[in-house]
Length: 359
Image 1: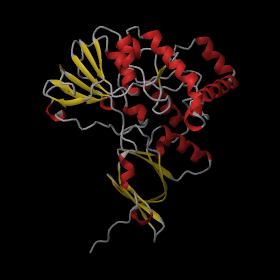
Image 2: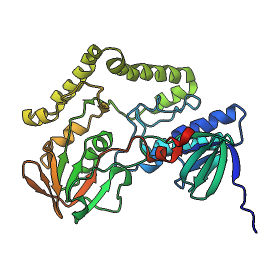
Image 3: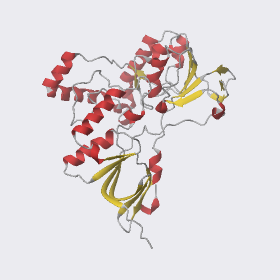
Image 4: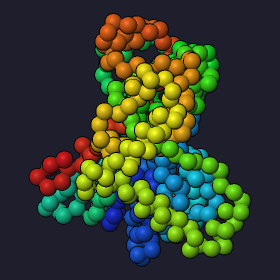
């Protein structure tokens, strides 16, 4: 009778080879720890920046801050890095620090259970079983598309896709497009598709706070200066950190700190949206910081264009070729783009069971 093969044992297993997993891998090697693996269900590294490829995809944190402290990059072409440039940066860091060899691509974690008697993790993956002493999740919050269950969505006869799974083969030129959701991703791709579609209907549940982005191309002289004076890059990083962390004063210290930030948002709205009725629709009804504030200079101007309508009525149902709102209005639609965000926490957390089998 054949004896079952013993599962491979790895002292330390990391789930995910995105920006967190890569950073952890570099830190582990710097600490002299070399016996570990990163399990990545996709066929490449990069996480969020590999998966999200929608038009206009970029980071809403300045690149000098949204980068590793141990790997400053003076070559960013813009104040805010775009998806292709961030992905290239992550690949370069992973290659330079020789952590790609620790990555196992196409390996999805199906279940992880803590074995108290043996004092180790038992992992079931799509490519066999493993055991580990230490299990670390480096899974980010933007890995699982969230699509609300709206009545009739399955009957829609046109094209529909989530921003995470952008259909680049589908031509939006001249189409009647509905965007459901106005989160950070939608705020980025709406200005990109607005000029090419025939009609754009934006279904908004709640208006986001929009603050000026002040994005621009960096000058060759700036990049040269950052290369020659690394301390300047560190100072710039600290300046951005201080400014962005200041948003936390609203939620964690006192709501009275909201006033200067809300003033910036209201000024942005007043400056870019002249129509009082549209401005009313786009005015948030909650304190800044209750939801994620978004940096953009292109979103409001896109919404003011003649081929765009912002709808604040709730969606009652989706039909084969239209969307019907709670007030009974029916709007013909050729394509639906779901900009409804991500499932948080990621579904992988339901697969991890610790002491007493608790997820």
